[in-house]
Length: 408
Image (tube, rainbow, N blue to C red; front, side, top):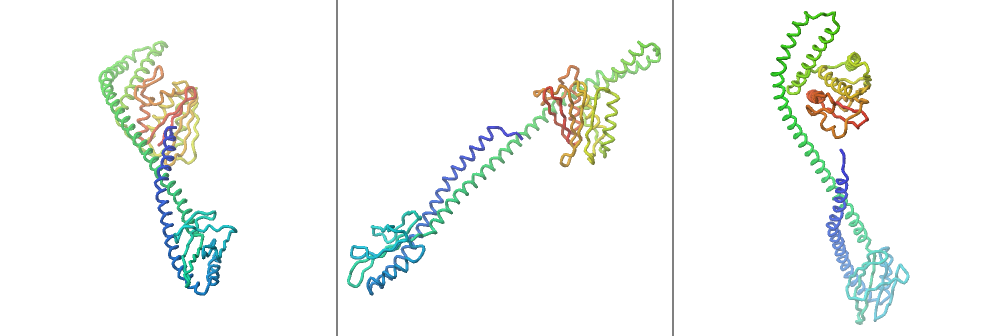
């Protein structure tokens, strides 16, 4: 199936627009996940702040030293970035895993979050009072790795979900496009079949007229000639020549009438297993007797089999070979191969070929591009192949010969 540049451009545009649209649709979900994660982290921080406030207040009953030891114990946790104790407006104790890094908050919020080179940091501040009423504050800044992991997972999910949704839309669009093309092709086939039926109806009327106006008088003419023939001098060369010409032309007219009639009636099909090597050997021999200058090589794949109507197949191949010979071809090469569950017969000639603009109409009745062609042979060939349950295709380039492919 040929794909146009417009189709490729439309698919690319659809893919890009799908990615953009789904990205912004999913971006809201990602931000909602991140916001909910922060809410949970802050909620956990508030719980820790209450516990820290109660524990630190009890420790202050023994002075500042127990509180410093407690904070150092917390600092030993690998998630904790820094700890600090403030009292009486000054920094009493501080420890940081990064020298000089102590971003203590100045607001009164017990829990705050902020970005750092390490990622998201949560700082918990607990306000304390000792028995003497002195005011202290304990600060713990820790790196909550789950937040960054959730953020990274949300980003990956955003990308993957966007690409997946875009791919689904793209596949669906491609399917609909393909279905539409098949539907259009089917409609064309139906329209073509309708046109062919209309043509056959016209041909049927013409054939009925031919049978009535020509066949009967021609039959009477032939009978009259048979009665006259014994009175002719068989030793006269001139008389003999004209006698043979009369019989030959009467026979040719009868054949034309019969071929016209074959286009309008259903052909009886009698299928049987065909011995293909013998069939093509006899076919070559028959044409060797009729057309000495025509060479018909046959390339037959070993072991191929065919069940079909021998006489109808012969007639179909004869029509193609005759058409090639009348076009001036000296070689008609036949190649027979398996084609999936069918048989493929290719006939390639070395004639002048068929013009591209003529290819679509060569199987139409009464359409011929040869000076003396009747336009019946290839039309009848297509009818035969169709009734045998197959199909026929033609390909050619002007000056490159013609190729006919029959699939049975």
